[in-house]
Image 1 (tube, rainbow, N blue to C red):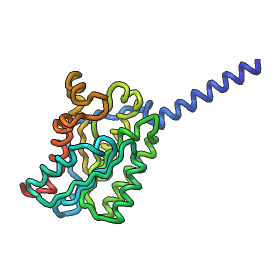
Image 2 (image 1 turned 180 degrees about the vertical axis):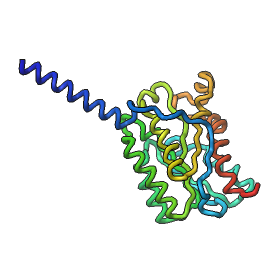
Image 3 (image 1 turned 30 degrees about the vertical axis):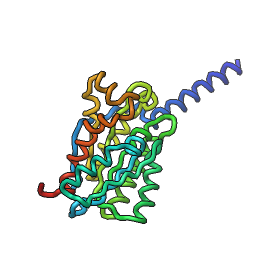
Image 4 (image 1 turned 120 degrees about the horizontal axis):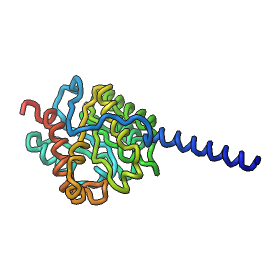
Length: 238
C-alpha cells in the first residue's frame, strides 16, 4: 500500500514537473495570433542618419550563409560603403547573442542591429524558457539603442517535420518577437507568412531538412524582406 502511494506520488510530481517544463518552453499555453509576412519600421527612426553599418545577430540561418553577402551587394547599389556584418554562430541562442552584442559594442558602433534567435531558443534540447528569451530580447533592444542603433527583431523560417517536433512552442517564441517589437517600438522583419504560404512541394525544395532554407529559399523570401526593411534607412529618399 505504502509502495503504491509513493509510486502514485512520484507519478503526480513527475507529471507536474513535465507540465511546468512544457509551459515554460511554450509547448502549452495560449497560442499567439499567427504572424504574417510584413515589415514594420522602428518607431521614431533612431538614429536619424543613413544606415551604413548593419549587424545581424543570429545562428545557423545566418552563419555561413550566402544571403547576408547578397544583401550587402544589393544595398551597395545605392550606398557603396554600406557593410552588412553577420554576428552569428550555429546552434546558439539569445543568451549567446546578448553576450556577443555586448562585446561587439565595446569595439564598434553599428547604426542598425537585427536580432533573430527564436528557432534555437525554442529547442527543447538546448533552448531557453520563454521568460529567459524575452529578457534577452529586451536587453538586446535596450543595449543597441543605448549605443545609438536602430533595432529590428526578425522572425526567420519556421520549423517543419522532425525539427518542428523538437520545437513544439516555436509559435510562442516567434510571437515574442512581434510582442516585444510592438511594446518597445523596435522594427519587425516577419517572414513566417512567406514560408507558411509555400506548398508542400515548394517547402521540400526550398527547406529540405525542415529548418534551414536553401540559397534559393533565402533569395525568394528572406532577402526581399530584409531589403524592404533596410532600403529606406540605407537609401533614404530613393
